[in-house]
Amino acid sequence: MSDWYVSSSLTFESDKIIENDYGGEVMMSWEDSLMSASAAYVTQGGGDILEIGFGMGISAGYMHSHSISSHTIIENHPQIISKSIEWASGKSNVTIVSQSWYDVRDSIGTFDGIFYDTYGDEDVNHFSSSLSSLTKNRTKVTWWNNEQSATNYYNIPNVTYQSISVNPTENTYFNSSTYYLPKKEF
Image (cartoon, rainbow, N blue to C red; front, side, top):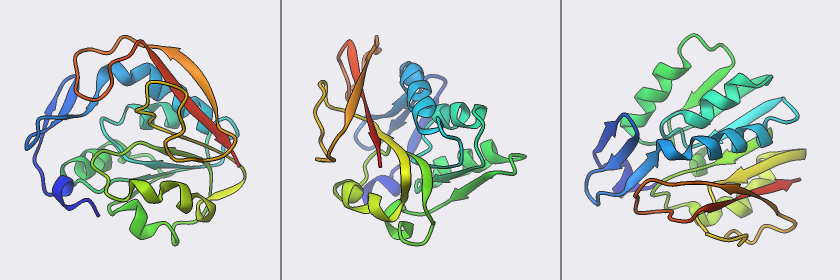
């Protein structure tokens, strides 16, 4: 579990979440088109969707707007957990798991679509090796790609990329006019 991040205090503004100790942005509203594209990809076949990291809930809203059977959201930051629970209220096919994704990876089942977008995740290097316990045949997987090219940080084989033009506002984590959305089908 990401102790430093989970124990840090966050500030929620209308267009971003800021981690107070280091001043980094956890998520920003300029990512809206990327969250929409990520959600569209992982929900293409419907079914059971896993979202690792809730953030501002932008991708969750897009995922829920597609025809899916279930939507499992894993979030470990206490302040964001409460926001995800509030968002899920009244949505009978949404389950919030308030833990580290890595701690529950072998017990939550398999999914038809997976979106991984976390901040301060000390288990990030286990993402690739954990996919076999989370995927079905034909599962569509994508993740936040902080690389400013079609670079596969996780060394997952046979990944393709969709280039998306973006215009990020000033931030500390992504400053390029092109985002490369990774796409992997198992």
